[in-house]
Length: 545
Ligand code: GLY
Ligand code: MN
Ligand code: MN
Image 1: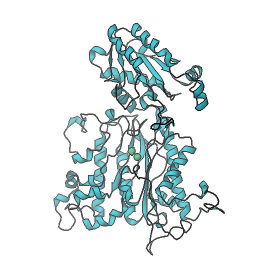
Image 2: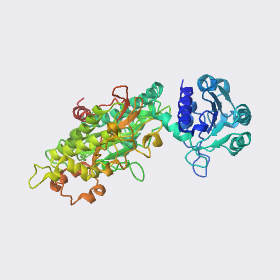
Image 3: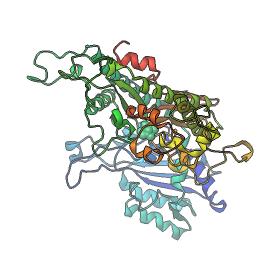
Image 4: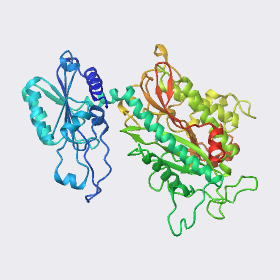
C-alpha cells in the first residue's frame, strides 16, 4: 500500500521546521483538494486524468474530485498517528453508466493508508469538529487562487477561514514548500515505483532500437496484402520517421500497463536533435533525412521504403513513462542509416557525452554539491573538445595560455554546446520539487564555506538542482552536446574555436544520454536498465545483437 502516513508525517515535520517559533507547537491542519476530470474546450469529452502530485503524495488516492483533511500536533498523540481523513465522491447512476465509478467507502479504506474515508458531504462537519477540538489550530492550504493547484471549494474554504474566529488562523504560505522538501527524499516504496517506471521505459527504448536493427538486417517483412488490402501489423512496422519511433515507444509502455507518459516524448532525428524540447508545434513529426548515400557508407536494407536510403544520422529519444504517479526520464541517442552505426563524428561526440556522464556518476554521493558535478561535466566537455580540435588548446598552432582548459571554462563557451543543466530531481514530477531543488540562496559548494571558482555564470542558468546531494534523492544525469545554429551564432567568431573543425561536427545535430540514479548512503544506484555503450547501441541498431 502507498505509505501516505509516512508522507504526512514527513510533510508536517518540514512544515513545523518552516513555521515561526510561536506557531511550531500549535495544532496543524491541512486541507487539500484533489484533481478533477477536465474536459476539452466547450465539450463533454474527458481529458486524461492524472492526480495532482501533492494530493497523491499525502493520500495515495487517485479518485478525481476527492478531498483530504489532516490533523497533526507535535508533542501529542497526533505526531505519531496523525488524523488523515479522505473524502471521495459517492458513485451515482450517471457515473456508473458513463464511466468507472469511484470505489465504495469500504473498498477505499482497505486500499488507502488513511484513518477514515467518507464522502465530501461529510467534510464540513469534519472541519467544524477540528476547529472545536483543536483550538488555535493553524489551517494550511496550497496557494489559493493559483491555477497550478486544484481549488478548494468556497464552501469548505469559508469554514477554514472562519477558524480565525475561534483563535485559529489560515495560511497558504508554508504547505507547498514543506511538501517540496518532504518529496525531495524518496522512501523505498517510492524508489520502487520509479524503478518500475524506468524498467518499462528502458524496455521501450530497447524495443525502438531493436525495430531499427531488425529493419537493417532485413528481418521485418510485410506479409501478403500488408499496407494495401489490410493495415500493417505491429510486427511489420518500420521506423522511417520520428512519429513511428514515438508510436512504438508509447505502445511498448502502454502495453506494459503504464497509463501516462511522464512528459511529452522528444523524438528528434538528424540536426533536429539540437532542439532540446522538440515535442510541440511540429516536433516529433518529420521523416528521417533521405540519401543519396555515399559509396563508402553501409546501406540500409532494401526492405525500407522502396528505392530510398536513409542518410547517416542520429535519432535522439528522450522519453519515460509514469508508474502510479512516479516518473522515468531517460534519453538514448542512436544511429540511423549507415547500417545502424554512428558516423566517426557522431561516435566521437557520443563517446564524449558518455565520458561526461560516467565521470559525473563516479563523483555522485551524499554531501557532494550538484553545482560541482555539473561543473565537472563542462570540464570533461572542454577537455574532449580540445582533443577533437574543436576548442583550441595551448598546443594548437598560434595559441597561447588563454586557450587553457581553465581559461575556456571561465569564458563560458562550452555553454554554447551544452546549454542545459546536468540533471534535476525526479519523482512524481519530471522536474520535481522546484522550490526544494533550487533555493534562492545557494549553499556554498566548498567545505568550510570557502569561496570556489564555479566556471561561468551561464553554466547555471538552466541548472534545476542547486543543492548538496542527500541519500534518498533521485536525480537524472543527462549531459549533452548540441550543434544548434541558434546557440552557435554568438560564438561564430570565437578565437577559442577552430571553426573548420567545428564545421565537420555540426551535422551530428545533438547527443544526449540521460539516466535516472538513486543516491544511496555511500554513492548511487543507476535505476536505468537500457545500456548506453557504443558497442551495444550499434550492435542492436545494426541488427547484430
Ligand atoms: N525530459 C526533459 C528533461 O530531460 O529534463
Ligand atoms: Mn529527459
Ligand atoms: Mn531530464
